[in-house]
Amino acid sequence: MLEGVDALDAYVSRFLAHLGVLVVLPPLVLVVVLPRDWISGLVLLVTAPVIPLFMILLGLGAEKLNRRQWLRLLRLSGRLLDGLQRLTTLRLLNAGDREAERLAEAAEDYRKSTMAVLRVAFLSTLALEFFATVGIALVAVLIGFRLLDGALGFEAAFFVLLLAPEFYAPLRQLGLDYHARMEALAAAERILDLHAEPPGPAGEERPVLGADITIECESVSFAWEPDRPALRDFSLRLVPGEIVALVGPSGAGKSTLLSLLLGLLRPQSGRVLANGHDLATLDPAHWLGHVAVVPQRPHMFEGSVLDNIRLADPDAGLDRVRAAAGLAAADGFIAALPRGYDTALGEHGETLSGGQVQRLALARAFLKEKAGVLLLDEGTAGLDRGTEASVADAIRRLAAGRATLIVTHRLATVRLADRVVFLEEGRIVEQGPRAALEADDGRFARLLSDAGLAP
Image (cartoon, rainbow, N blue to C red):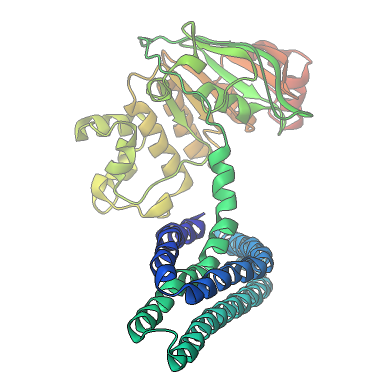
């Protein structure tokens, strides 16, 4: 995309600008030359179309090469990004050298493609310069013969000779810029595809929802592909003060439901209501202001601990941030950092442990005091038992008075829930109070038993 934007710049600033000059200048030269020397004007008129004709003929082959070159650039960029993002895995598997070889092969393939395009570009430039030079030479030769015969005056001959190069100049320049046009067309394909995507209509309503928010999913269905439904006729009610745990196998539709509740996706049928208001009609920023989210892998941005917690409320003072961190059981370890809340974390928070990052994410959620909805995705995943217990206590405090949904694969987290919903293939196959489902001989009880967590 970024390379494509750079290519479009040359197309707009050079090719289109010189195309405008081409439309104006050669006809103007012809209008001036024809009354003074119709033979030279006729030569200019006949030879002028030859340059664009060859430009188009050569361009047909070059355009295919350009498209192929951009496809190879996409593959090379994707392979490089993939390798960099998974560098740790490659090192651990001792696969760095193999990946480097594959990257070198992709780079060599791109180099060959680039050279093929440049060969065609240089060939087209040579051909255009040749025909323009031949045209000027032909005008000069005819003028010379007629000067010798006395059939043409010196003033008219000199005037035409001065204008002949100016007549061909826009044609030559457009030929030089034609490569920029082909490159831009090939590069713009992905940009135009993205631009053609119709944006989803955003809601504009900003109703007063209050602190107590009830969420209702009414016969919600959503499919990523026609033959791959993520949710099918799904109905669920979340009320303030109740913690609901959503469990089920991978691919059951849990992450899709989270995106629907956040308003990032819209149901293809059915509705998601917040205090009776359809999320599809709400202003997304207004709705997200009422939702506190703790993702599975919270991201820490480059900056201080204070900056990262205040992402939830940029206007929050230090006292409120400390109070939120205290509720999230994070104040203790933050105070032990070299500069406390002013300690720089670095991108991704690599100086912190997984449990510390999770508690900072909880502190962000605590800072959104007016949020009536709490959504957690694997809130205790990857934590040791001691850290898991402190995070679980923080989640209980955070969920107080809020409509809370915990999406989890980690069955130990289910102990926090008042109600359990078992999701499978996009449908609710079992739900009820946690204690009742544990005592029953249903799917949830068997899942607990298989994991060694049966009461």
